[in-house]
Amino acid sequence: MLYPLVAQLAVRRAVVLLGPRRVGKTYLIFHLVERLIQNGVDPRRIGYLDVEHPVLQYQSLAALVDALDSGVPSSPDQPRFVFLDEIQYLRDWERHLKPIVDERPDLRILVSGSAAAALKRSSQESGAGRFTDFLLPPLTFPEYLLLSGQHELLTVNENRYDVPDYGQLNQAFINYLNYGGYPEVALSKEVRANAQRFIKSDIVDKVLLRDLPILYGISDVQELNALFTMLAYNTAQVISPSELSQKSNVAKPTLLKYIEYLEAAFLIHRLQRIDQSGRRFKRQRQFKAYLTNPTMRAALFGEMTADHDSFGALVETGLLAQLFHADREIRYAAWSGGEVDLVHLHRNLQPQAALEAKWSNRPLQDARLTRNLAKFCRSTGLNAAICTTIDQWGERQQDGILIRLIPAAIMCYHLGAITLDSAGIPVVAENRDKT
Image 1 (cartoon, rainbow, N blue to C red):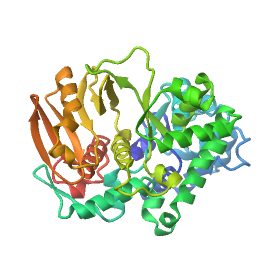
Image 2 (cartoon, rainbow, N blue to C red; image 1 turned 90 degrees about the horizontal axis):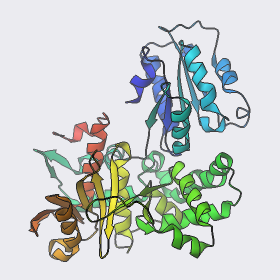
Image 3 (cartoon, helix red, strand yellow; image 1 turned 180 degrees about the vertical axis):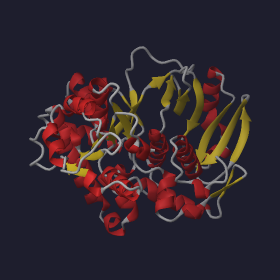
Image 4 (cartoon, rainbow, N blue to C red; image 1 turned 30 degrees about the vertical axis):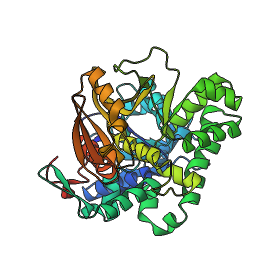
């Protein structure tokens, strides 16, 4: 959890809080400040600045720290706490932060920023041994249920999920996919009523039209916006950069840079391809592109109903979104005539689990829909795999492989709960008897 990283006095490191816009980074900082005060820290020893303010963007990091350095004496055992929000707008911030960490043991510093991958790369290159990265991704499905007061829609008894009403749970799941990924949208009826304007203007447009051009010197914003719009509409689909370059008349190297920038800003996430035997391709000619937050799909193109032809892709996007808390290697498998949506690799990069994301109950009666899943398991030595449904449970042996059929909402909750537990976040503790 984040508080111990900020409050610990024995380790001299700055904390870099990473995450996309509007996932609650600033709120979390204010919560940290409140907790520090509750634990006896003098409020005069705590300073906060929003570096996104135009007046502050041209100041040096040392000058900002000095501005927060009030007349209250500090020492290593009674430090001053400094919080700098949206740090990416300070040029060479990581290069200037490292000597401050080295020379000021009386300071505990946390910086945050939205262009997460760029920040992470900078902090790792310039702050080796001095920075600790902390990722704050969008809300998981368990967090959404808890925050919206719907956590009693399912319970766990002896490692079994009990659901009184699958209709209500699925409606909550549909709502989560459409607007539950952002805390403000999930919790505010006013914001939710105008979620398209809130997310598109305050999240997407600011990132595409301002953050990325400033950070990377992008001149043709229209090309970048068109690319993101296409990827967002086709979330969870296979993308070939070569084919996309030909269709868009954008040079392939430029296209790949744009995709890297979109991933750096946490707008999209790429999954690399493995073959039927679980081996990685030496040359990755294609990948699957996902929105990091399924809620962005509704913000750009309107709310998606459960009977929409593309709702299965949104379900797959939501399932993958649960795993951003976890340090897991996820791939997709594809070969001539077959594909498996999500494959979890072990640390030795061997397939450990496989999942086919579907929004249909047909796989219970039609084994052809899980044929590729069984083929992949046989080729890689897995003895079981999962296929999601709308609201039906089941299992069967298929060519010697145990195929488990699990409702998509349950699977999404399960992945989110496991991920939160592994991260030490007890957000679903009151709703779960066993891990």
